[in-house]
Length: 402
Image (cartoon, rainbow, N blue to C red):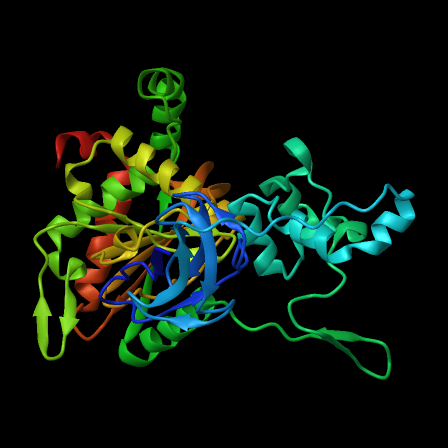
């Protein structure tokens, strides 16, 4: 007998523990090398753990929902073992009789026939994959099936993640534990408000210049670079230009010291099925518009599939949050510690504005920058936001670095 341990993957220094989700194999079942056995949820990402070798799953040491640390043994594989023989098949029965005779087998087969992305979404919703009819090949439950689960009552799990409690007047309530990510987000938001002296300054920007530039070049840009020309890349470029002029906005506080960063790592807030994540554009000042658009598109795709790495979510010197994609007109973003400022951008709408004494219609976007008043004075915050505004209203300045 040759036993191989399945270990918790190495977590980053800022992550001390993780939670096991659902084992995809049970003791006695055959496994193939590199087959995904379980997913490990940290407060930042979900990590897939592959089988280190082929063989038979001999033992599960840490069950579903267990809290684990880096390097702990989760399970053991017998690389020389053979899977238990399947029970002899009973004579064919009628469809209703067969369905009633083996509900557990049906559940197990269905739960293993869901994609990793679908399993993540269904776990968040508290939906059992076994209750869904997959639209993929061989009945596999796809991500689309998981996303649509709430809108298909007949296919939803009979029981949510936690039992619903009914009040006497028939109004239901459901208690569901926070995911590790949601709990960590809540903790960091409270920490940010408790530890920072947060103020927010506002301004407005006429987006006509960027709209014209984008309209003129978007088709050629996409053909040349293989990615659509969006708006976030312009905000990143404008923010970097402002941070160069006002370095304290790119700084952070460490005890009684101010750390001035000589690099520009910009966090981009991205929504995912598990909650908000903020992957980092490293050295954004050295990236072209095309580089930024490609990286943001990649972040968005991998955030939806839970494929972002811990390294990509760690660090950052300044953040950008785009509530405009959801229709927000104005908001006050919360600083992402240990950063000292964050830019909130919003929906661009045609609005009446006054130019040279005349009322005209212009595509306007309201900007909000929250900052830590402990190290950033109002003057620097306001001037930094004005610098962002001016760069956006005259985007050619971003190309000339003026």
